[in-house]
Image 1 (spheres, rainbow, N blue to C red):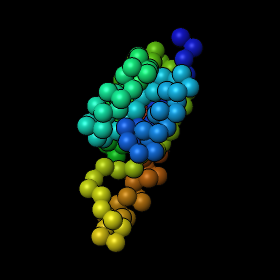
Image 2 (tube, rainbow, N blue to C red; image 1 turned 45 degrees about the horizontal axis):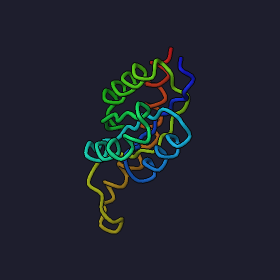
Image 3 (cartoon, rainbow, N blue to C red; image 1 turned 45 degrees about the vertical axis):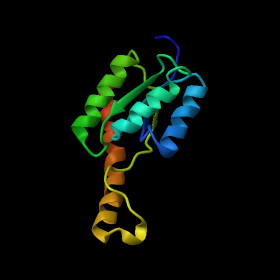
Length: 131
């Protein structure tokens, strides 16, 4: 192990997640930013390439898809030498977003129903791959 802390930030390429990614990079951590938006991931890598050489990895994945999450966690652990010190479960689910007053109740319920499942799935995927 190289002594550098490693964190996985879901939704890490945009919004609050991007801010968290910047926070951990600024403290010298290795950061894996998992996000479903590949364009945002490319922008993130371009923005921080010079400031964090070798310490930032973008993992394209939708947290609502178990196979994508497991693949991303395996890639993270291979990249970090098996080290994962923190998990920031910031992501929601991917989809077309619109103002709340324009959101159908079924769509809103899908968002709310996904949150506990995403959290549990990420925890299990990380735990399984760290054994």
